[in-house]
Length: 500
Ligand code: HEC
Ligand code: HEC
Ligand code: HEC
Ligand code: HEC
Ligand code: HEC
Ligand code: HEC
Image (cartoon, rainbow, N blue to C red; front, side, top):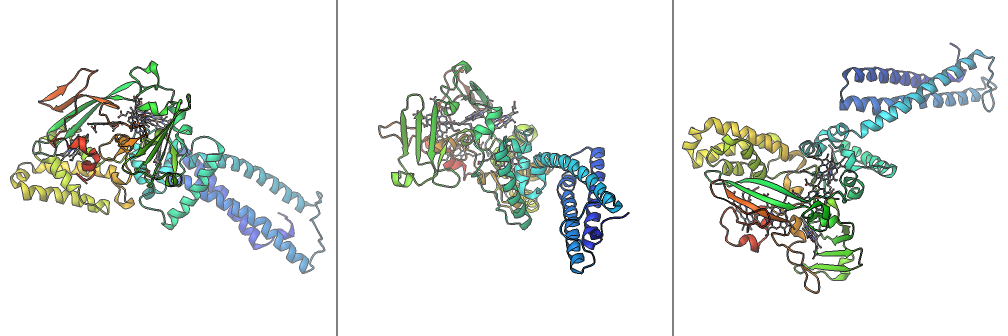
């Protein structure tokens, strides 16, 4: 087939072959992905990112080769071609060139449209975000799959709608790809995410502040680390909103997101755990109240230099999708779900010992958990180890599995890197502000009253369980006797160091 003389050069030939092979590979992979009909991450990477890259490279190489060849032809005086090439439609070479150009361009434009659309969808998929860089995203992807949002795409919370955030996320995504390839990403990935899109624009597309929740019953099972693994139940009536939904967010925890108010605060650490200054604005009356931490009073000149944040969903629900549980909690869950484990004396205690060591890899953790548990029993209660050998070995497997769902040694991730702000057991959570110590100049405090956010309507062991009627509530009884320490200290003062 006759083509313009300038086409005859190595670069254009290389470009043509590369582009043709790319097209061919693209079609074949399309057919394969239709047949398999499954979301295979690496296939997507090949089809929508690597191969199109080669096609573009090939298509760019063709005109560059032709341009260079034409310059060379001119220099050597082989042809008297001046300026732009003359398009003579009576010339078969020109006819062929134009036909090829038009056909290839149309196919290319069509493929680009389909490819871009598919590449966009691919890059927004959970498989892409969660599993492509397997090791980096493993902690978040694993916890996500066990969360109430397991069917909400990563991008619904991390990107949201609109072109501006899409572009922002793709640019920062590209930076992350380079960091992953270079292995220079931080372990663990820092939290909170500094430029996370505000909850108003993500969470509130599915949940919105005008949706009112009333009270909610919460039933918690705990097990004490004694010989009987004593079960301790706590039933709480959570005051999520007002007592009745028709009253709206006029009281209860969701009062903070009542659109008539705004709460902003200042923090002086990178995890937002230390909050020295809180301001409450009533947007209807214009009243403003400032609460200052009397244990960490900062001069106004320092306050204005610190970062400020307007409180939203994320200041309480900061782990809606990646909740890394602590060992006492996931062992409680294991005991609650597997009745037979309760019959192994000292099960919780030995599990806590086994989970106490910091492990550097999953393999060493699995080995360490088994060895520590067995050696704990053989040192303390050798007769129990003999009696319950099979059950203990079996239980080790369950603990290893639970460990792998909540701790990720390769990424340096455990629950303590990612504090959960709802509640107050293991981190200060709500008590960051609600500690009776954030006061206004006229003595109003952000309250730590145990009945402000919930009432306890049942607590105790199975054989001695105290209940109250739904409207009154009980005074808290701490499961093991610690006197009045639970009033005088924060729960987290003990519970964040009690166990690993
Ligand atoms: C329901 C909303 C939601 C979904 C769905 C979601 N995330 Fe998150 N993600 C969050 C929030 C909230 C944070 C913590 C932000 C903060 O504290 O600043 C977070 C934090 C992260 C972090 C930072 C490290 C950390 O744990 O704080 C990574 C990485 C991450 N998410 C990845 C993912 C991936 C991958 C998916 C999908 C498999 C996903 N997320 C799905 C809401 C979500
Ligand atoms: C795409 C929709 C969607 C988005 C965006 C979304 N959620 Fe959800 N959320 C859901 C669904 C669906 C459920 C599960 C409801 C159920 O279990 O009945 C849920 C449940 C919850 C629950 C209750 C959890 C439980 O244990 O029952 C909380 C709290 C919550 N979401 C907070 C958030 C926060 C905070 C964000 C923003 C970071 C967010 N959601 C973003 C859809 C969404
Ligand atoms: C001041 C803290 C706080 C803020 C801010 C907050 N929540 Fe909550 N939310 C809670 C508490 C506490 C509960 C009850 C949790 C429990 O059951 O242990 C709750 C419960 C929920 C539930 C489950 C309700 C049910 O009855 O099952 C959803 C959904 C939810 N919140 C969504 C949101 C969204 C969306 C926002 C932001 C618009 C938000 N929350 C802001 C504290 C807060
Ligand atoms: C950034 C500071 C801050 C944090 C964190 C915080 N609160 Fe509050 N909360 C306030 C302020 C300020 C008030 C109003 C105090 C007042 O009116 O005197 C308040 C009031 C309340 C009230 C009473 C609302 C009413 O009028 O009935 C409840 C309930 C409540 N908070 C629950 C929670 C829960 C649950 C958490 C943790 C998940 C939490 N708060 C975390 C600042 C905070
Ligand atoms: C500012 C609000 C607030 C105050 C004040 C408060 N709590 Fe809580 N508490 C919570 C929230 C929110 C949870 C649920 C945590 C969750 O969703 O995981 C909770 C959970 C609990 C639990 C159950 C823990 C579990 O995991 O089973 C107990 C027990 C408890 N609180 C006791 C108390 C006691 C005792 C006081 C008084 C010293 C108190 N609370 C004061 C908000 C509060
Ligand atoms: C002075 C230290 C201390 C303080 C403060 C404290 N605890 Fe404890 N707590 C303990 C000890 C010790 C145990 C026993 C651990 C075991 O045997 O499993 C325990 C056990 C528990 C358990 C059952 C065991 C489990 O892991 O499930 C619950 C629930 C509990 N505490 C709740 C609270 C709450 C809520 C507060 C705050 C109001 C609080 N504690 C404050 C020391 C403390």
